[in-house]
Length: 295
Image 1 (tube, helix red, strand yellow):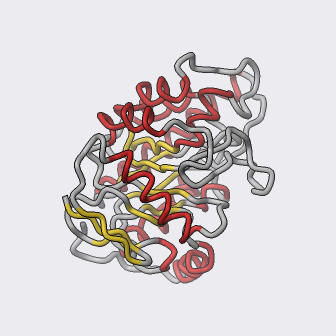
Image 2: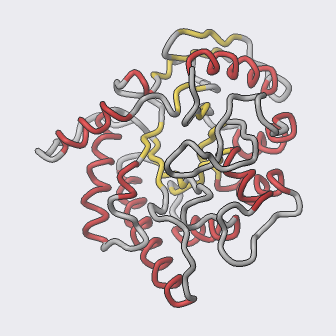
């Protein structure tokens, strides 16, 4: 991706230490590798080629209420991490919980959000990094129309959406955590996919029981191994495929799931059977810590 590493600053030492302590396998299995290469998993705590960097720092400098200078200082640290570890995708979020806002407060926050994200996207684009927005129910920007409006407002080719099946269901079917009148899509998660499809740049495959987590401090969507929840993956994959079937890989997201290595293997097999209906996969070989595919 990049032929030259970026110089590190003294502050980066603490940032990398944070990653070594906290990256423990939330997104750990690459599914659709189209180049015959091995994708290293984040829980190995190594340079995760063709994986995604999880930007937990968004909480420290929420892009909707932070100055451009403050936001970009923290963003550039994450960008150096991506470039030096050869990670082509960085996940972002709004960094702030849902709360009722007046029309004026909403406008000010939204303008700040777009300004910061657009600047970040332009800098990341120079380094060949794609940014993907993951919208979670408890966080601001959690209505389908808001998510779409944000990506369209940033209007940069490397600023895309992260489709997470659990979040998409709770947002489109239940309107979870939305303030005021809930925005429910009549077509549910499938309508959500069609709505967001042209902007999807990364995929989290995960099941859910349709509830918010009672064990996770953030109160986000319940994450379950594939086949253990209520989602119809035949319909989801059939709908998602025209928009995301071209991506180099999909990820299994086992945030807050126990025994992820065992359930990951089982979920990979489950998903392989579903995907095989839409694209013939000749070989998928499992190795602890990686998934290698040949097409």
